[in-house]
Image (cartoon, rainbow, N blue to C red; front, top):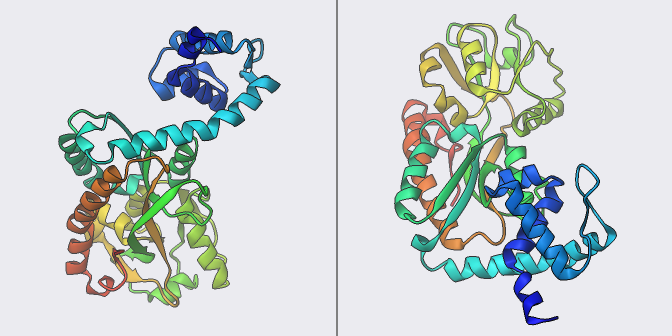
Amino acid sequence: MTKAERKDLSLKGLELFQAVARNGSLLEAAEETGLSTSTISHHLRALEASLGIELFNHKRRPMVLTPKGQAFLRNIDNALHSIRKAKAEAAAGDITDASYLRLGTIEDLDSDIIPDLAVHLSSSMPRCDFLYITDFSHTVLEMLHNRQLDLGITSTPADRPHELVDRPFLRDPFVMVAPNSTEHHTSDILAGKTDLPFLRFSKNLMVARQIESQLNRLGLSLPNRFECGNNQTLMAMVASGAGWTITTPLMFSRAKRFQDQLKLSKFPGKSFSRTLSIVTTPDCAHSIVDLVDYKLRELVSRHAISPLHRATSWLSDSFKLIS
């Protein structure tokens, strides 16, 4: 390989090739990287010219790798992972040198906690450009797996991709929430012996699957009258007297405008909980993870744990930070 060819094999060109191969689209790769499609196309053409092969079948849409392109991708995946990890470790000593952080989080934290975290990170990493995404746990995890995010704050999955690293920080038990006006016992409500229907989270959510698994273990099959992907909407429905639901203290803490109309109770019988974690790609700098972890714990304790412990003492043993 000549000196000119070695110069053409740029790290940026290899990373863009990987992004386009993963997305199957110049437009999606452009959205992920923040570059124009023409810039990405230029890098791909230069890479193909340098190698002397076609990496993509340019006549197909979505873009499809040629057999040689597939082989090239397999060979560079591990190499790019090692380069990213080396760069992260080299920058780990000083977070002020961090230049870009893509962070995804579940909406359970986006009212008070994530805005305060964003302000703190911005002041701690003044040279860093940030991208914040709010979505469901399974979407954040998929984006981490596809290297579209560097760090995510999610419910810990039972089957997370093995290459991701998680750091648990919160135990969030499941609780029952009913209208404050109801006089029914929680065990009767759970057993379906009242006129209050069960209001569910949407079945595609990780939290819904955990709840349904627990109900199945208890041998309970509750009619499906109302299903929603938004905790605030569920709290509004319960507050209006439309039914009852199962949620967690963290999610309940966000529904401040409805709390006077809600009755928070222990889940009858065997308790169960979810764990929230900071999940990262393996090449995310440890110093950044430590910074997020430290501030996140402080904010969760201030905005959610301490107020609920004062108002509901029975949560003190179950709703807590994980050391």
